[in-house]
Length: 309
Image: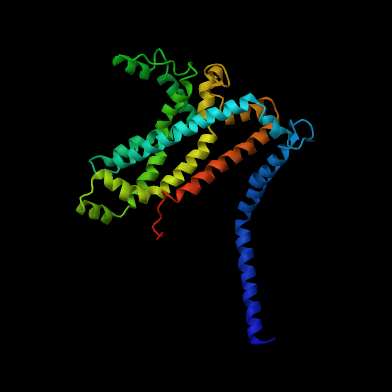
């Protein structure tokens, strides 16, 4: 064996040793991923093709669960309610968080205190926050309708009128934008100050500086937040469930709060139709992937990366 070949064998042995050592240290995560993530995903896809209720062996159905979805009126209703929360809620919440981040980024006395106060509601658990807002939105004794009455406006029945149940949830959503705002604050800190100085020399107004300097530099963060909020809105569950149960109905008044995840929960754990619920979960996955794909395809027109030419 030549000296060169022996060196090559030695390098390969060291590489294998490094690889095995790395796999040994990452094995807890790998095992956890295989057992608690990959296996449930694969099992749910299999169950979506079967009739399964936990008490008997799965019975093969093929694509029947998926075809049944398109004949289910509640499937369309729950998807409409979810799309409402997504379309009406995501963009206003994102814009509100950005405005608040710009305000909290202003150099004023007590800046850290304002930031802390604004972020505190995010620490409130979702159920507790929902119960608090149910009191605020009470049509007779709630503070919101009382405030509206002072300016001559009769407040709606937020929790009872099916036309106002989803807007009430959108209104409550502004309460929990603290995390998004903090992430926007971090992005604003990374905008180079020299660009603002150059814009001021050129006579650009604050509004012009925002669109030509600020927004391009924080556009990657906007893309990230948009995708994450999209995914979260399609999985909207806790707040809708709490509001609905307050009316002694799982779907709320006239099923106006029957969101897709709540309907999926009903099928899986109330009716024990795991096969149908699994098909719903995979349908939701495909819908989210479709919208995420559209956002990513259009992002090249409005997202700016520092390394782009």
